[in-house]
Length: 221
Length: 221
DNA sequence: TTAATATTCAATTAATTGCTTGAATAATAG
DNA sequence: CTATTATTCAAGCAATTAATTGAATATTAA
Image 1: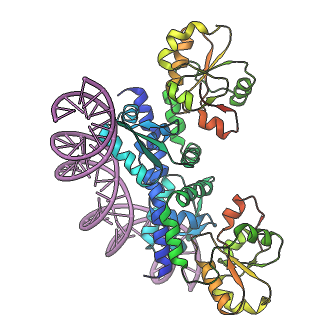
Image 2: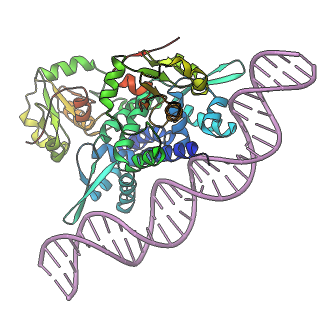
Image 3: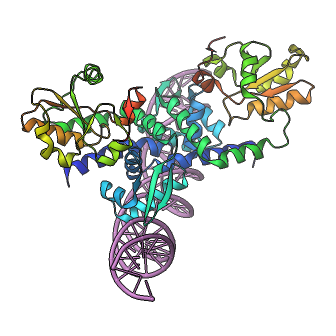
């Protein structure tokens, strides 16, 4: 074969390894979760409703296409996204959200009839968050909060929200966020808060988005 | 099924449409070419060494995942990338280049023994281009030059290079570029120029990269 | 050592995909 | 109206892939 043709075939074949890795919905979900912080296989299997063996296989596909790295920690194997991968994922999500109309429809159908999920003036909300005019709750599991959270947010994992309700003044508005637009933790948090008489709204952005917008992110306690 | 689970499955399923579209090496090559400017099916088939029918099918996959748009112009159907798609492609290419070591190897093997292709000080070269200290040749087909080119470059399609040689002073260094690191037009141009006694080097960056670096791009004549 | 736990491996099945071939459609020119 | 050209459609084959199952491996704790 013509060496020029051969060269191109080989190069695009390598590029397609990345594409193949992100051509499976389950692997995309795994990547999305991993962008919140490293995880064990078992943990990822629970989050995604996959069997352990299947999760492991998907993770190995991701590893072979160099999108994730793996480290053995005692009895567990911990996976984490490779550098640049979360940016790439965001870029892919952006194309999908802008180009595929079905995504908006699915979101609307899911949020239909839920309180506090109505479209709001995003920029005004972000302004109020920056000015600390609202109480911000990070309702993800505590490890994820530790790995990185919106500056000024309180760690209130969804599971503990009900027990911690008393701490929040009823007259101050509450903004809950979690992993991003397709994570439902904050949806449930806002539902609960509104039922209990708080004025709560949901912030769709996750920490990754927040960082990508150039806003302040903290980590640790 | 649990509505939360169902929501996630539906969303990531939509995301994966983008991933599936870029999971085929041939579709990636098509996208890469389209990012240089719109093309007909026949033209794309020639560039990629695919049959017309097969090209058409790939283009329809790209269309169904909303990565390209189509317009009928007389007897021809013209395809072009949808907004944001070229940025996404660059982001994917960047991950691939940084994470997949085989790409560098394939490139080195291909360029092995060719003159003027040795690794050079990229930034110094770009500086000299910006300062117009070298003659810059855009060796792509003229339509692509029209659609966008590095400011100050001359359109010298590879096919006409031999006939236009006389125009260039032998004492001024020549820099040739084409579509990007995986396009071989500039490789062939540099080989020819060096054989004819010119001092020519290759710029790996294409117009897209040039623009992405914030440098000056012109279009038209 | 043995038992328990987390992960990976290997084999199987059903479904999907890429490519080829030849026919069908649509726009234009004579 | 007919012929030509560009593109798409439809059917079929070979190859690849996702998920399941049960067994194998590796690390730790008893």
